[in-house]
Length: 180
Image 1 (cartoon, rainbow, N blue to C red):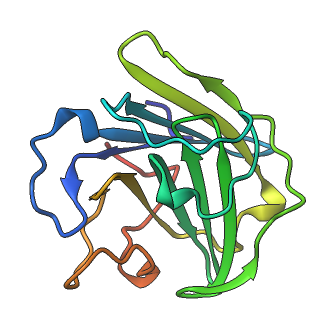
Image 2: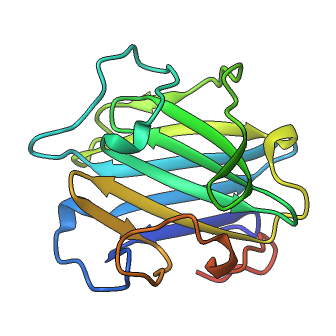
Protein backbone atom coordinates (compact mmCIF):
# COMPACT_ATOMS: atom_id res chain seq x y z
CA UNK A 1 0.00 0.00 0.00
CA UNK A 2 1.41 3.41 -0.94
CA UNK A 3 1.76 6.37 1.40
CA UNK A 4 -1.27 8.09 -0.13
CA UNK A 5 -3.60 5.16 0.69
CA UNK A 6 -5.50 4.08 3.79
CA UNK A 7 -7.44 0.82 4.10
CA UNK A 8 -10.17 0.30 6.68
CA UNK A 9 -11.07 -3.38 7.08
CA UNK A 10 -14.42 -3.49 8.87
CA UNK A 11 -14.57 -6.75 10.83
CA UNK A 12 -16.19 -6.06 14.23
CA UNK A 13 -19.58 -4.91 15.42
CA UNK A 14 -19.95 -1.22 16.32
CA UNK A 15 -19.03 -1.85 19.99
CA UNK A 16 -15.91 -3.91 19.21
CA UNK A 17 -17.57 -7.32 19.64
CA UNK A 18 -16.07 -9.77 17.12
CA UNK A 19 -18.21 -10.54 14.09
CA UNK A 20 -18.05 -14.06 12.67
CA UNK A 21 -20.28 -13.37 9.66
CA UNK A 22 -17.86 -13.09 6.73
CA UNK A 23 -20.74 -11.84 4.58
CA UNK A 24 -20.73 -8.61 6.62
CA UNK A 25 -17.00 -7.86 6.29
CA UNK A 26 -16.54 -4.66 4.30
CA UNK A 27 -13.62 -2.51 3.27
CA UNK A 28 -13.09 1.17 2.61
CA UNK A 29 -10.00 2.31 0.74
CA UNK A 30 -9.12 5.99 0.64
CA UNK A 31 -6.57 7.28 -1.86
CA UNK A 32 -5.38 10.86 -1.68
CA UNK A 33 -5.10 12.48 -5.12
CA UNK A 34 -4.51 16.01 -6.38
CA UNK A 35 -8.25 16.35 -7.01
CA UNK A 36 -9.41 15.02 -3.63
CA UNK A 37 -9.88 11.66 -1.96
CA UNK A 38 -10.97 8.62 -3.93
CA UNK A 39 -13.13 6.36 -1.78
CA UNK A 40 -13.72 2.73 -2.73
CA UNK A 41 -16.23 0.63 -0.77
CA UNK A 42 -16.55 -3.14 -1.07
CA UNK A 43 -19.00 -5.55 0.58
CA UNK A 44 -20.15 -9.11 -0.09
CA UNK A 45 -23.55 -9.57 -1.70
CA UNK A 46 -26.19 -10.30 0.91
CA UNK A 47 -28.57 -13.26 0.64
CA UNK A 48 -31.49 -10.86 0.89
CA UNK A 49 -30.09 -7.55 -0.33
CA UNK A 50 -31.68 -4.32 0.83
CA UNK A 51 -31.27 -1.91 -2.09
CA UNK A 52 -33.36 1.19 -2.86
CA UNK A 53 -35.52 1.30 -5.97
CA UNK A 54 -33.60 4.11 -7.66
CA UNK A 55 -31.33 4.36 -10.70
CA UNK A 56 -27.68 3.42 -10.23
CA UNK A 57 -25.48 6.44 -9.52
CA UNK A 58 -28.17 8.55 -7.88
CA UNK A 59 -28.31 10.23 -4.49
CA UNK A 60 -30.65 8.44 -2.07
CA UNK A 61 -31.77 10.17 1.11
CA UNK A 62 -31.52 7.96 4.21
CA UNK A 63 -29.27 5.52 2.36
CA UNK A 64 -28.21 4.15 5.77
CA UNK A 65 -31.57 2.33 5.84
CA UNK A 66 -30.20 0.01 3.12
CA UNK A 67 -27.07 -2.14 2.68
CA UNK A 68 -24.34 0.45 2.80
CA UNK A 69 -20.68 1.13 3.52
CA UNK A 70 -19.90 4.50 5.11
CA UNK A 71 -16.85 6.62 5.81
CA UNK A 72 -16.69 9.68 8.05
CA UNK A 73 -13.87 12.18 7.50
CA UNK A 74 -13.21 14.55 10.41
CA UNK A 75 -11.62 17.98 10.19
CA UNK A 76 -10.97 20.78 12.66
CA UNK A 77 -14.52 22.19 12.78
CA UNK A 78 -16.65 19.76 10.76
CA UNK A 79 -16.99 16.25 9.40
CA UNK A 80 -18.19 14.63 6.22
CA UNK A 81 -20.20 11.41 5.91
CA UNK A 82 -20.00 9.56 2.59
CA UNK A 83 -22.20 6.51 2.03
CA UNK A 84 -21.95 4.11 -0.90
CA UNK A 85 -24.74 1.58 -1.28
CA UNK A 86 -24.96 -1.98 -2.56
CA UNK A 87 -27.00 -0.83 -5.56
CA UNK A 88 -24.59 1.85 -6.77
CA UNK A 89 -26.21 4.73 -4.88
CA UNK A 90 -24.60 7.43 -2.75
CA UNK A 91 -25.26 9.98 -0.03
CA UNK A 92 -23.03 12.80 1.23
CA UNK A 93 -23.75 14.84 4.35
CA UNK A 94 -21.69 17.55 6.05
CA UNK A 95 -21.88 18.21 9.79
CA UNK A 96 -20.71 21.09 11.98
CA UNK A 97 -21.16 18.98 15.16
CA UNK A 98 -22.50 15.48 15.91
CA UNK A 99 -25.83 15.15 14.07
CA UNK A 100 -25.93 18.89 13.25
CA UNK A 101 -26.16 18.99 9.46
CA UNK A 102 -24.70 21.94 7.67
CA UNK A 103 -24.75 20.63 4.10
CA UNK A 104 -26.68 17.87 2.34
CA UNK A 105 -24.77 18.16 -0.96
CA UNK A 106 -27.97 17.75 -2.98
CA UNK A 107 -26.28 19.35 -6.02
CA UNK A 108 -23.25 17.02 -5.95
CA UNK A 109 -23.32 14.72 -8.98
CA UNK A 110 -20.31 12.42 -8.60
CA UNK A 111 -19.14 10.05 -11.28
CA UNK A 112 -19.64 6.72 -9.50
CA UNK A 113 -17.78 3.66 -10.69
CA UNK A 114 -20.01 0.79 -9.59
CA UNK A 115 -19.41 -2.91 -10.16
CA UNK A 116 -22.33 -5.12 -9.22
CA UNK A 117 -19.97 -8.09 -9.30
CA UNK A 118 -16.33 -7.41 -8.47
CA UNK A 119 -15.54 -11.03 -9.35
CA UNK A 120 -15.27 -12.39 -5.82
CA UNK A 121 -18.86 -12.33 -4.58
CA UNK A 122 -18.71 -8.65 -3.67
CA UNK A 123 -19.99 -5.37 -5.05
CA UNK A 124 -17.70 -2.37 -5.30
CA UNK A 125 -18.39 1.34 -5.61
CA UNK A 126 -15.87 4.13 -6.10
CA UNK A 127 -16.26 7.88 -5.97
CA UNK A 128 -13.96 10.91 -5.97
CA UNK A 129 -14.63 13.28 -3.08
CA UNK A 130 -13.43 16.66 -4.34
CA UNK A 131 -11.08 18.76 -2.21
CA UNK A 132 -13.84 21.37 -1.84
CA UNK A 133 -15.92 18.87 0.20
CA UNK A 134 -13.12 17.53 2.43
CA UNK A 135 -13.19 19.11 5.89
CA UNK A 136 -10.35 21.56 6.55
CA UNK A 137 -7.69 20.18 8.85
CA UNK A 138 -8.59 16.54 8.11
CA UNK A 139 -7.23 14.53 11.04
CA UNK A 140 -9.33 11.42 11.70
CA UNK A 141 -11.75 8.98 10.10
CA UNK A 142 -13.81 5.86 10.69
CA UNK A 143 -15.65 3.40 8.46
CA UNK A 144 -18.84 1.41 8.90
CA UNK A 145 -21.05 -1.29 7.39
CA UNK A 146 -24.82 -1.39 7.82
CA UNK A 147 -26.72 -4.48 6.61
CA UNK A 148 -30.16 -5.20 8.00
CA UNK A 149 -29.87 -5.06 11.77
CA UNK A 150 -26.08 -5.48 11.74
CA UNK A 151 -23.85 -2.49 12.41
CA UNK A 152 -20.12 -2.97 11.96
CA UNK A 153 -17.32 -0.53 12.61
CA UNK A 154 -13.62 -0.24 11.80
CA UNK A 155 -12.85 1.45 15.13
CA UNK A 156 -15.25 0.52 17.95
CA UNK A 157 -17.47 3.17 19.53
CA UNK A 158 -18.96 3.04 23.03
CA UNK A 159 -22.62 3.29 23.97
CA UNK A 160 -25.70 1.18 24.59
CA UNK A 161 -26.64 1.23 20.87
CA UNK A 162 -24.92 2.00 17.55
CA UNK A 163 -24.04 5.67 17.24
CA UNK A 164 -21.60 6.44 14.43
CA UNK A 165 -21.69 10.19 15.12
CA UNK A 166 -18.85 10.21 17.65
CA UNK A 167 -16.12 11.94 15.62
CA UNK A 168 -14.10 12.80 18.73
CA UNK A 169 -13.51 9.05 19.21
CA UNK A 170 -12.32 8.23 15.68
CA UNK A 171 -8.72 7.14 15.10
CA UNK A 172 -6.18 9.54 13.65
CA UNK A 173 -5.82 9.66 9.90
CA UNK A 174 -2.55 10.44 8.18
CA UNK A 175 -1.96 9.37 4.62
CA UNK A 176 1.79 9.82 4.94
CA UNK A 177 2.25 7.81 8.13
CA UNK A 178 -0.56 5.25 8.11
CA UNK A 179 0.66 1.73 8.69
CA UNK A 180 -1.91 -0.97 7.93
